[in-house]
Image (tube, rainbow, N blue to C red; front, side, top):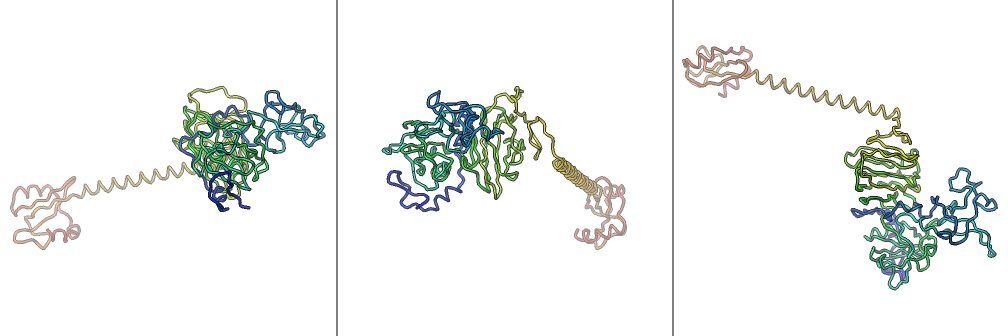
Amino acid sequence: MQAWATSPRLGAMGTGAPQSLLLLLLFLPMLLPRGASAGSLHSPGLSECFQVNGADYRGRQNHTGPRGTGRPCLFWDQTQQHSYSSARDPQGRWGLGAHNFCRNPDGDVQPWCYVAETEEGIYWRYCDIPTCHMPGYLGCFVDSGAPPALSGPSGTSTKLTVQVCLRFCRMKGYQLAGVEAGYACFCGSESDLARGRPAPATDCDQICFGHPGQLCGGDGRLGVYEVSVGSCQGNWTAPQGVIYSPDFPDEYGPDQNCSWALGPPGAALELTFRLFELADQRDRLELRDAASGSLLRAFDGARPPPTGTLHLRAAALLLTFRSDARGHAQGFALTYRGVQDASENPVLPKGSAQTPAVLPYGTNVSCSPWPGAPEATMRARVFSTVMAISVLLLLLLLLLLLLSLLRLLRRRSCLLAPGKGPAPLRPSQGSGRSWAVWYRRPGGVALTSPPGDSQAEGLASTYRPLSASSQSSLRSLISAL
């Protein structure tokens, strides 16, 4: 079966599209249009989840439906008879505890909870949490097929994931991507979404054929995303938004080299890392001042960012992410917002970190305001300083040599005047045209006048004649005259 094909209902992608198209989608990086803003991303502050399956949900919904509807959840410290309980999560990594809030401890497609067992033997349910949809996910919509909910190109894949569909629609130049029935992908624009019919979130419950931990719409239901999610480049100018690692919600791949320009309105920036999981210290995220290029912060798999809000006194940032040849991990999701007053010194919430304007490359990242530089960094700084001083001394020496040469040239100015005695240099240029060479500081004059000229002889008497050895070196010059 082809990895990416068409069906009569799914529209035109060309009959019998080759399997190589999927490989093209997997590896072709897309440039986000200038001015794009990360999604609903429209209101990232309202989202409680930044992973597509809600594994990071730490909210307080304790019923399977929103606002107290649905069935009540059991407390996690009273579910020892099941596979997941607070006893199995002593560190709280899954968010379990002495409460009955919806969670996703097993990496399922969405948060869930245990419920009182029914006569049918059902003892758990998914939770419908309106606030637990990652920014960039626009919701579940009805797709009747006539006309399709998204009117652009479409296709199917037996290896479909959310990012495979996003990448395909980015390549086609569309704003939106929709996944349906676990294997179908549609592309469209915001005008399609304006006439779309929303469906309950629980209707989009089909597992993606290419990833057991992701949902790809439902039967006649489209899960719609903005194509900016997981892009490798972009120019972000919205007042606030979210930036995801490349290929998110899939894992980022090896040999990634991505950059994002971040310039919201304001004189400073606030960043909050909602997720951060890099494979090792060779996979690195750098934050640089866009104006000066100076490195503000750097994080990797061994040095994660601090918890809480990160305050940066820069109006615009350049974020770059690179992974090595073996890099594979979930990646990161960070929210940002522009701050108007850079001089304001806000009261920092617990766990936040005030970041200086410039931090040396390689600084050990911690939650303290001024982390100390390691010994290797100090050696590098000393070496750079010595090299700079050496270059300055070399330039100064060259300048002194040039000045000395200029002074020497000025002091060796010559006077050439007709001589009245025996010619010290020969041959002469005709009868009565013998020459003598004279010099005097600071300048010289060349006179051509007949012998016996009292004015020339008076002027020459104020100069000293050159020595015989110096006159010998000028024979060729005088001969030419």
